[in-house]
Amino acid sequence: MLEIVSNYPGLTGQEIAKKAFQNYLITYNILIEKLKGRCYKDENYGWHPLSQSGLANKTKVSLKTRVLKIIEESDGIKAKDIASKLGLERSIVNSLLYGSLKDQCEIDSTFLWRLRDEKIKEKNSTKVSGQTNQEIIAIAVKEHREATINYKGFSRTIHPYNVNSTYCVAYCTYRNDLRTFRLDRMKNIKLGENFSVNYDYINKSDSQIENAKNFRKYY
Image 1: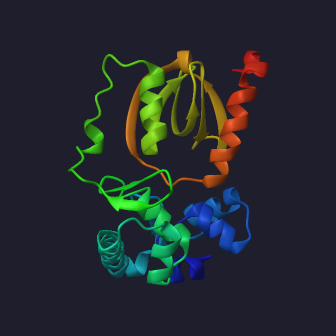
Image 2: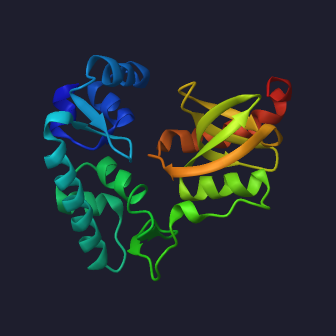
Image 3: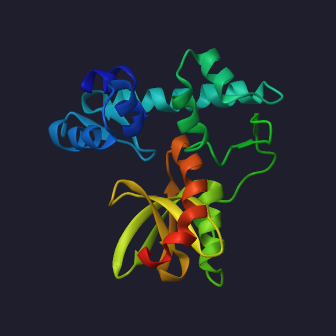
């Protein structure tokens, strides 16, 4: 596991689990318990070897610059082609595009990435006062931002993937699973940083939110 972190700095726990052919929960426990003091997690949920923190941060900044340069020189380019030009796995490029570079880049309906035409306001400046729970969570779904909520008296941090007028399907960091939440039971919603997108959850969330009405009593 530490060898994967060292060879591929910046991978998320889910990406490390996939490379190691391990369950995500097992991988996460190893990272935070067995490898504590030997690796660290950055603000985009990417893991780095602790002994090379300075080098890892420099590599991260350099990689961002290179990705932006490729996008700037292209009239629209797909993530897989950016990864190919850099000799990287697509998941690493995606984690940047949907994470720390989200404010500088945008994707169109044909999955081509371009630089944004105008400067985007700071992501933490989103006004939530006067907005409904559905409207706030819809922002989180669109911008891939985590949300802190009070739900049934407990504080939860979630990664929303889908929302309708009644329900939200989100990854719950406490339960380590994709869960369905009732919007009217969410209190004190606060939007946070971007989360690393799990593309399997996008498909699962569609069917899960559709089936939520059949299991209303559980939510």
